[in-house]
Image (cartoon, rainbow, N blue to C red; front, side, top):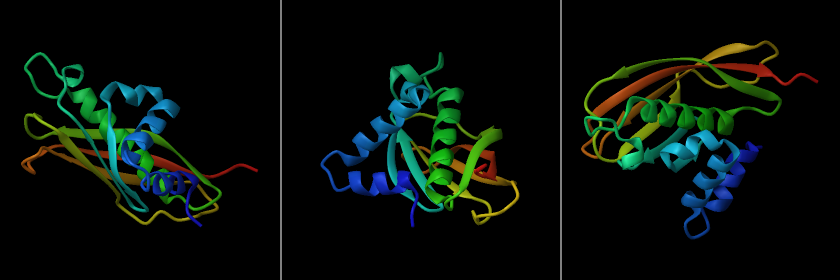
Length: 156
């Protein structure tokens, strides 16, 4: 059985503008992410892809996509990937994030989030590192993050 979030994503993909509607729904639930106007382009167990356009609201004083917008995109895609991948009875929360800025971020930014290890049901809590790579339209890596997720059983 797949996660409710993944079921919603799959159902909405059948609609015209389904990825736009899904992305808006996510931002309604977690309003802070609306500040970057993300678009989730792929969600499946073990992988989430999303993008943000180079707009004024995510631009810094030197004309590139600002660092916190890239961090927001990384946290969003990592969180959605984990949520879509979790076995029933498990929950998650981000615990920390290490980032590296590799190149100037101009144009549309494309993020891919994947886990470093399998996401499994467990009776004890565990750390789950998630890697996020962000590339520009030319495929140049401009940013990478390693986000520590804390996965634990739901308390009954």
